[in-house]
Every structure is written in structure tokens, then in C-alpha cells.
Length: 215
Image (cartoon, rainbow, N blue to C red; front, side, top):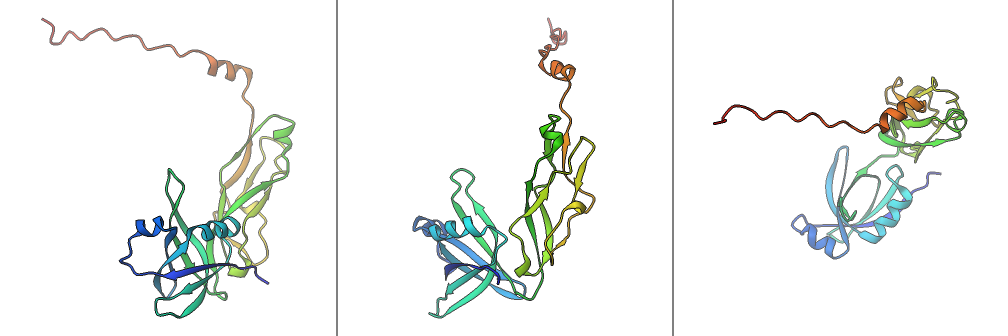
């Protein structure tokens, strides 16, 4: 059975001011989907933060909507986009993407690197990640919250993990370029290279004053 998170929302009038809503502890939001009329909403800020912390962006959320006409409806959705204030980190707006459980969807799934690399532990290399998420396609019920990437195969500085090397759960298809590099280990710098980095930078010689314009 698919685990679904729940959150309550209320339909809102478009003329309601966003700043006033936020001042009252509400987050402006919208829910939309393929062939669906977009509906503006408000969501309680505290309730959303709790839900988002647990569900993230790749879990199905049951959005219980209280409509302006007094009726209620529940929509299956993903938390598709979250706009936040860059200074305060306050959530400013939420996009819910309404989904159908019998239709495949695409999403970007974060990667979680697990295991130990011999090239890092025993040879002093630095683990460099080129990708931290991949794009997948699957039914909503098969959508993973994250995808693990085992780095134990990175046994030397020649070893590289590509997208094609990632193992995904059954029912999930990778859409990212299979040849794209995901992670590798960089060889440690030699003593000569480190010494060069520590050398003081010689300031450029001062240019002689221009003779143009001199009396």
C-alpha cells in the first residue's frame, strides 16, 4: 500500500493579498494538473512545514480542500515547487501538482551516496559528486523518495560511476543521460602542487605613468 501524507487546504479568492495571508500564518498555494483547472489555495504554514519535512517533494500528498462553496474534495498531489525567502527561509508559495494514480509522471529524485570508497579512505582521494539528483519516470505509487548510489566500486582514481550504473527500484525508469558522470574520486594533490598553491602571488609591476596629457 502506498503511503500518503495528508494536508488540509482552503480555496482562496485571487484578490486576497499574499502578504496579509502570510502575516496570518497562511501560505498562498495553487494546485493544478494535466487537464485540470488551476485552483488557488491557502495552507497553514505550521502544518505545511511539518508535512514537507516528512514527505519531501516526491511523496504523494492527499490535499483535503475546503472549497468556497462549502463543499470538500481530496486531491492526490506532489509538492511540486516551493518558493522560499532567501533571507528568512520562510515559505512564500507552494505549487501542488495533481496526479492520477494510473498515469506515469516524471520527477527529479535526489541521490543518497552510501558505502565506503577505498580510494577515499585508504588513498586519500576526494569524493566529487557531479550529480545530486536524476530524472525518473514511473507511476506515483512507485515514486522513490531518494535513490541510493553505492560508492564501494570507487576503488581507485580511474573508477567512475555513471547514471547507467545506478540501480533503481522496479517500475522506475531513468530518464537522465546514461553516460553522464555521477560521482568519482579525485587524486590528492602532490607536495609540489600544494607548495605552488602556497607560494605568495607576486604583484604585477606598476605601469609607468602615461606620457599622454603631460605638460
